[in-house]
Length: 135
Image (cartoon, rainbow, N blue to C red; front, side):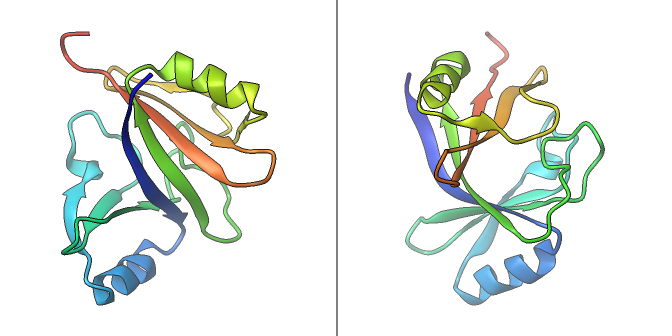
């Protein structure tokens, strides 16, 4: 299994406030996943600063079947981990005691496989494998 991305991810009911804070810290919008092909979930933006650091900000307001459609009483901070083999990474995390957090379990679309998982100690990983057209 190869990890291709490992970045902070914040799910929030108040994305404008969080985006404003990171913009004040020097981050700028790099990628708006709402506009990405196949993305039907809540808006998610990737912000980047001058040093190349990234942070994802996702709205927790989404449709029932969306990954981030959970009732949040506070922001949820996770690590977004993109991998080249979802099942291998999923098995490794569950072997280490991780549990699936999102109510729909593993989410599969024609563009990705993803699941929000929580470690026994409490931190979360948003596990994602992007599916390329040739796969």
